Image (cartoon, rainbow, N blue to C red; front, side):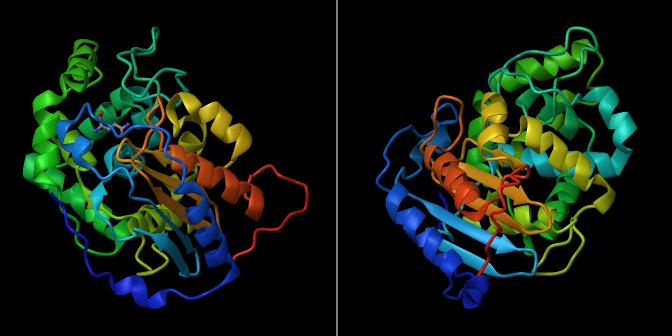
Amino acid sequence: MMTSQVNQRDLEIDSSPLLAVLQELHSQYKLLQEGAVAKYIPELAKVNPDLFSICIVTVDGQIYKVGNYDQLFTIQSISKVFAYGLALEDHGLDYVLTRVGVEPTGDAFNAIVLDEQSKRPYNPMVNAGAIATTSLIKGSGPTERLNRMLDMYKRYIGRDVFVDISVFTSERSTGHRNRAMAHLMLNFGMIDRNIEESLDLYFQQCAVIVNCEDLAVMAATLANKGMNPITKEQAVDKRYIKDILSVMYTCGMYNFAGEWAYKIGIPAKSGVCGGIIAVVPNKMGIGVFSPLLDVRGNSVRGVKVCEELSQRLGLHLFDCSGQEAKFD
Ligand SMILES: NC(=O)CC[C@H](N)C(=O)O
């Protein structure tokens, strides 16, 4: 399906205490074999469950990475964060809020549920909300809308990005649950475009090919007020960073979001690919990739690694115990 690629950014790796922490966590948690790879999208079931990588990118452009950091995979639900940013840029917060709420659900990511009163999906980080968000992406037709989405990814990642056509068609032909959500929202007037076109764009945004280092660069871009710390390109208008990070903080880990906010304490988003991004505002972005998932669809090793990093580096946003974040 996908092959590894030579990565230009390899040159920037160096040795440091932070790299030693990542190496230690990688050795420790690669032994953890709990969880299972996602199977409901047939093409995702083919992934090697042993893959495991951790990468940190600081807002001043330092890169620390261990494991299979250049292994390619599809971004899946992590895309929801970036599509939300594009919808905010296209329409502004007030309008987007009329179509997608910002309340945590406590339900699974793929629950077919809308807010009883407003008929909006609860938030943009679960499937229903993400499909509504994607339906807001502007463009004169499917190709222009896809190209705007790919250009947006390119600003965050710093290179051209592509859709994995096998994963896209695999999800498109089996994604009946997502299609049901789209029909429900069409019924309530929450989606007013051609729903098949919006579903295709949603499946395509989920099937964009990234590696773990890309995830960390994307997270670092959010940490850096929307400016990619490697290319210095502004990926998203900085006035929307607080909206994006707030909804990641409260809703990004699905029905684990409360415990995540409590224990780990930084905005994050996971995907059934096994990726997690976590954002330490004004400091760094973290990317973890390990496809073994827990029952909520979060990477088992990814959650553990982020929990340890938060504790060891003092990353919890509300931690006043005096432990400073260390980067080198
Ligand atoms: N949690 C996820 O990563 C889900 C994304 C997947 N493409 C879906 O819509 O089901």
